[in-house]
Amino acid sequence: MDLEQRHINKIISFLEEKKPGGHKCSVCQRNEWQVFGKIFQMRQFRMAGGIVIPCVMIVCTNCGNTHLFNAISLGIIDGEGRLITDE
Image (tube, rainbow, N blue to C red; front, side, top):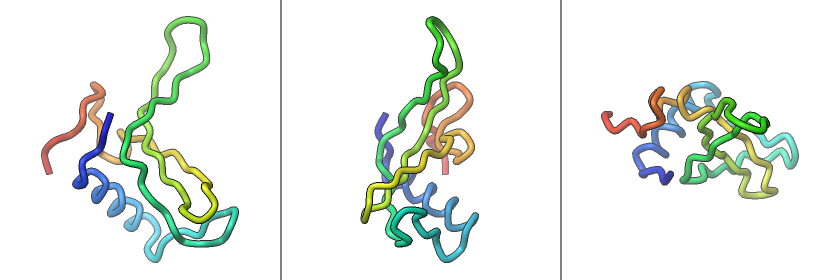
């Protein structure tokens, strides 16, 4: 699922609120992050069924270190798996 620029802006605002001034990468110690403009799903490993968590990927543009954030907690996806469209 693709994110619109307003969703990316909302993610950046959320992260800035949590840690003003940014967050240094644990690998290279740089503060150079990019929001990957897609939503991914993390699926529980099971033969059938299981939990699916929608995730947004934040990537260090210097070394590639990757962090996943729950898209529901970020306010990007609702509990039914739909993009939230209102501001």
